[in-house]
Length: 530
Ligand code: NOJ
Image (cartoon, rainbow, N blue to C red):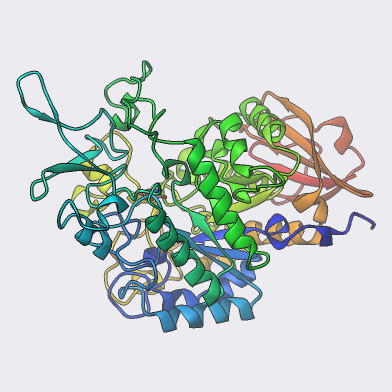
């Protein structure tokens, strides 16, 4: 027994976040698209998993050009998903089960259908003109009209769209239907912080903040430098380095303002979507006097190869990069990333789940990864993702990770009475929640066991991290809290490896495989108590 009390840690340090993609969780009204009442109906499932918080991808009114990341009203609910009353019911139902609820705030851009943009584009002297980023064209060598700089949209093509009516370009880091907001405008900033306040006052427990590092651009909008590493066949976005279009000092000031606002409501959480190397990521924690987001999202497990030495090093590097007041976080999958089981296979996805849920820091678990949903082929006529449609065939499509949750063996896997908006995983008759609930060796059973262990052993959630081995296929680390000393041993290969000496005599708490052996079997992970 023993162990440090975890009471000193706020809920978001001890807890596990579960990401729900609302279009694909549960449909309640038979239109083939998930909704809030559907999520409410499945809350018992989420609570029984053993997670602590739910992050909902955007639920706001949206023309769905980027499936909700194009917001037409920051203070309402998309009718496809329900109403504000449905939201209030969902929030109360989540809280009644001890679950926190995070919304997905999209501050960098709105929809081009937002009334603010309609006003802004109506004429050059509209008071909301500078709520967006408008610039004159520049003349090319032959007098042709060129965009103001060389910035490239993350979805390919110029980041500038010509507006015939007012004779200027507007900036869009993503789709032309997602014009960038101008956070240098005090009125715009006040309106957006007001939207955060609106949801805090309704009782949400925090936000995941979309592309936070994009939120302010360098004064004068200088050209971005070319990226020497870019080659055709790679995302066009990467032709230039986003030096002047992202990660500006003023963005950190806004991040600190958002934090101050959140702190005014008690223990609320801000997760910043920030895609940067460790040294620059770490700055988004802010300082003790001026803290910024609680969790600058750490994508390194998604971005690196599945190799014990690589992962051992990236954990050490990430841990070393954190300021003393910072708290780590980890993620293996999302609505933007390839499914982990598609990337490394189901056998290793089990090991990956053990890694995710035994590292120091807050894990985020993406819906469906607890079933090890793997590759889902999307026939060309079913492709919906604008990123794939704009740059087809180079592996940018996100539809395969956004397919509906398979709940049971009934028609459409119990997701909807109608044909789902995206195809189901082809193996859904066997790979679904009901089937895996009944199976002791399933990924779902393993995920629940890991979450139970994490809850029972504060050393896993909040203890110290110490690397023990990372060589060949073996990754091993200790997690210690007070007198509790746990050892996590992971075999990232298919061949058996010897257990580290420290494991000998230890008590096996959980394995990713049935049975036990004196070695670490291929594709096996084991947690020991020492
Ligand atoms: C990041 C979101 O996760 C992604 O789905 C979206 O397309 C972009 N931001 C633009 O909002």
